[in-house]
Image 1 (cartoon, rainbow, N blue to C red):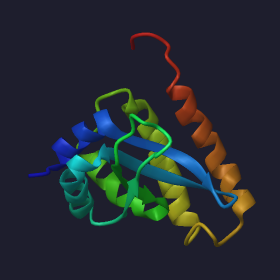
Image 2 (cartoon, helix red, strand yellow):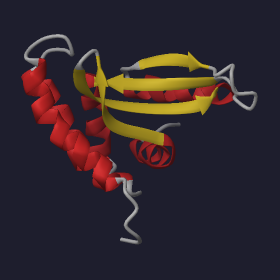
Image 3 (tube, one colour):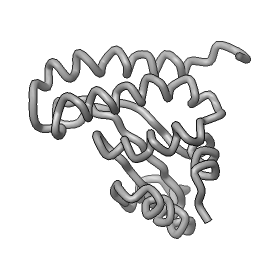
Image 4 (cartoon, one colour):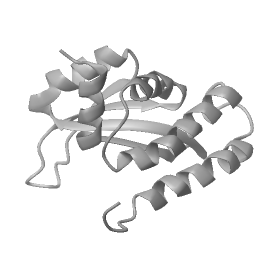
Length: 144
């Protein structure tokens, strides 16, 4: 059974939060990739959160690659995850990224309806500094 605390721990180890470009626009994103033999788990996480998309992935060029199932949340849908992570905080180094990512989710959700509407330049100007902070927090600086 999935709980907020279990999901937070799983995200600490296997999830990815960030801000990525798509179609000339920046947007907050969350992703989990697992081999497809753990597909039931990925589908259960999607069902627990209640939003997002599932995508199959397979790199045929890499002989060691195995089919994967990816779960993605993009843009305003990330609000569902921030509610969970506010109740059950991250504990790994992702906890340093989370405040910047959450702020990006809030800005994205409160200022624009979707990734195609509004002033993309203005949105980029608001989200780029947060993207830079997330990336800076990923640099290894030794034990904290």
